[in-house]
Length: 67
Image (cartoon, rainbow, N blue to C red; front, side):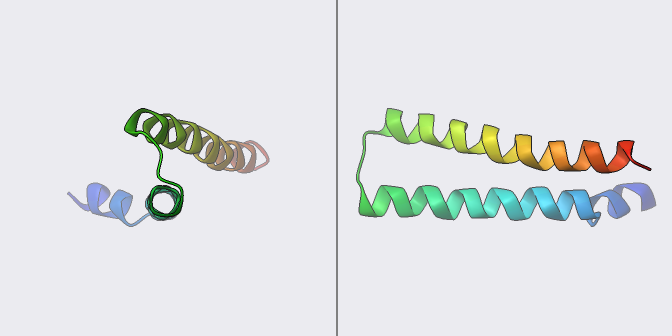
């Protein structure tokens, strides 16, 4: 149970949750100011998530390989 709790509050988990929150805010803003069909919003969400999570993982993987 201790390892699970430490995982929940790890830097990586906080980073993923923070990035996901920013993605949600951006997508909600796009939907509010530039109404688009649900299919387009879904595609934008997947693309945004893919790009941002890819950047975060790239940063994490390169950091761990340099140690």
